[in-house]
Amino acid sequence: MSTAERNIPQTLLEQMLEVGRAARAAATELAQAPASVKRAALETAARELRAARTAVLRANAEDVAEAKARGLSNAMLDRLALDEKRLEATAVGLETVAALEDPVGQVISTWQRPNGLSISRVRVPLGVIGIIYESRPNVTADAAALCLKSGNACILRGGSESARSSAAIHACLRRALVQHGLPETAIQMVPTQDRDAVGIMLRDMAAYIDVIVPRGGKSLVARVQQDARVPVMAHLEGICHTYVHAGADLAMARRIVVNAKLRRTGVCGATETVLIDRACAATHLAPIVGDLLDKGCEVRGDVPTQASDRRVKAAADSDWGQEFLEAIVAIRVVDGLDEALAHIRRYGSAHTDAIITNDSAAAERFLNELDSAIVLHNASTQFADGGEFGMGAEIGIATGKIHARGPVGAAELTSYKYVVRGTGQIRP
Image 1: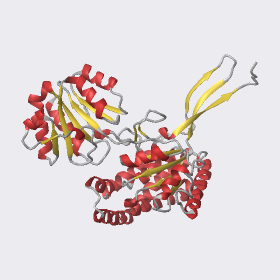
Image 2: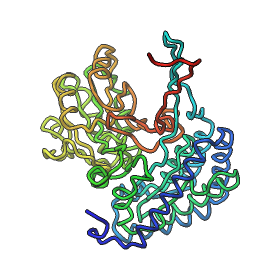
Image 3: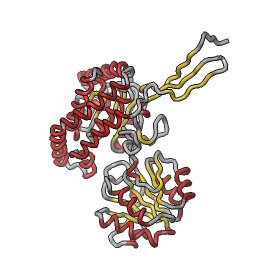
């Protein structure tokens, strides 16, 4: 379908294409930027963000007030809201990314051929990355930092609910670029909230955008995957499981389950389903269920879970495989490791899943046999985060299997090329 058939105004199309042209030119320059300059720009961006915290928090307060008036869910409001602590964490994230080893130009491997040719595989930027995201204004800083570190220009399209917050953060990043002689257009925000701009990014800018990264709800990711004419690095829903195995220490299990579900319910690494092994249900089920209920979490369970506490609601079939993003959890009793693995494979999203056990053999089976992007042993699923992995930040958790998987940091935003050095060889 052409832009005319989609009723897209010519002025909007030209405006977006100009953004693309500017990004492509910036990407060419940024790919050659010294590592020291990129690092300094990110360190300056962190200082600019701290200096502008009053303005950023004021802009965020306006976004939150409008979002509440529009009736956004508690999960969306939690993702949207900034405070001093979250803003400082964003600034620290910028500094952490700055301090990472620069991936551009890294030699991944090298080998010598019998004819004397020396061949190296070397990391290079992807080029221009389009990032479409909802709610979280901190993604503006995280995504821009990772793109800058990896030598990529980026085009950011945040949700309308976070427009003021994202613009205030973007202004800090832009000032840092200018101060260090980097192209201001290396980090661009889509200059309109017109929804047609997203369609243009997906369908009409293949000449300028090399990869699209959607970060948001299931409907956003589905639309991007359906409409995009450029490669997509998909971040699907986080239907995460915590399996309490028969060999789990009860005190450890209670701590981990509460944290995995309730530390932040609106993040993609929040546990949505807890599986309890029938072999330990008599001792572990009621305390774990009680902990969650006492902390205000709604529990939807199968028959044994309902029997453990009268406050438990009956789980519907749709609750297995549901990403609640709220203080709601589904709990099921399973007959051992095989049934737990089967449940996760059927209902999970290959995002993040954890086992709690002191049985090392069971743990190794879980870690080896479950094909999720992140698998954990005796740790909370809330560690599904690029910052916690030492990446400084992340653009998202990629659940596909092509190019990047798991937390997408700076190194995952590069490709590679082959550099071949000879001494006059010709092919016979």
